Length: 339
Image 1 (cartoon, rainbow, N blue to C red):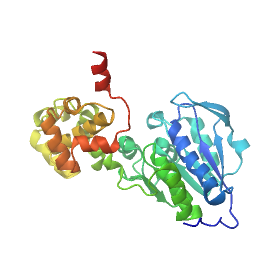
Image 2 (cartoon, one colour):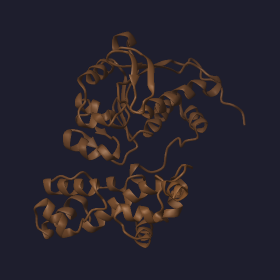
Image 3 (cartoon, rainbow, N blue to C red):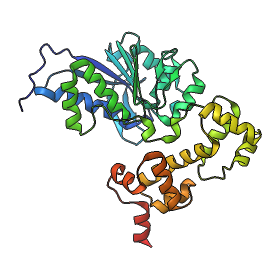
Image 4 (cartoon, helix red, strand yellow):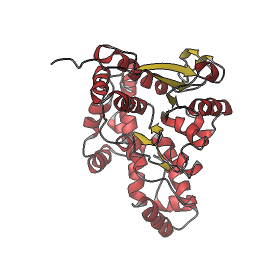
């Protein structure tokens, strides 16, 4: 197969990454590697120049303990074509003023403004997403919808483009976002070459709901439903019978059932099962056995877990783990080896 010819008159685009102490490492390095590989594709070329930007410059300590060096201030970085705001868990609770200042300064004259994961909270806090469609990590979608009601949150999307603003879902979805940028800038062949090199999908099938079934439902609108949803998600294995949930929400079981039908378009029992299934999926990916996943998720028995997988996912727990689990030692295996 012949190689694609180099692109004529390649324009170099400057991309500024907003970073800060506690930033999620992969939110930065995932998109960075996509852009680096784009520079190497089809015989090479300076398609992208990247720069890390923070309030004070110098070094930034990521959440995983890896230090990012060579970070510039916004003034030293100068103008950029695209801004990428990386995420961190603490942004969901509060966006620091210095992060807002840096992002706002870089975005002022940029042609595109993007976010990875909870970096969308920075754009929302700046008012940039008002009246626009956006996404973030499925775990934070409900919080974003409550805190920023002017933003049309799409909890299942891997990435969303609305005007010059681009937002992406949790962590690794920053790679999907960066591939979309490369495709928009240099065409599908270059983006496909990068995806092949990184051994990832050019366009990943499905949305976030394949990893989080709980987020397939819309954010709760009423206070009783918010109380119930937060309690179940926080402790899926707890006692979430209909009378118990109704008591926690201070409403009657009949009224709570009506609220579930109105807001989530399902019954309380079915929704609780979906949340427990979501927890069981994560436990399996973390290396737990089917029996342990069933117990810790609240589904109870192996057979109940298998039925839930068949009903909602059309597969078995064993096949699901085989397809999605990285090769690593499991906690159960370690426990057996040391007992």
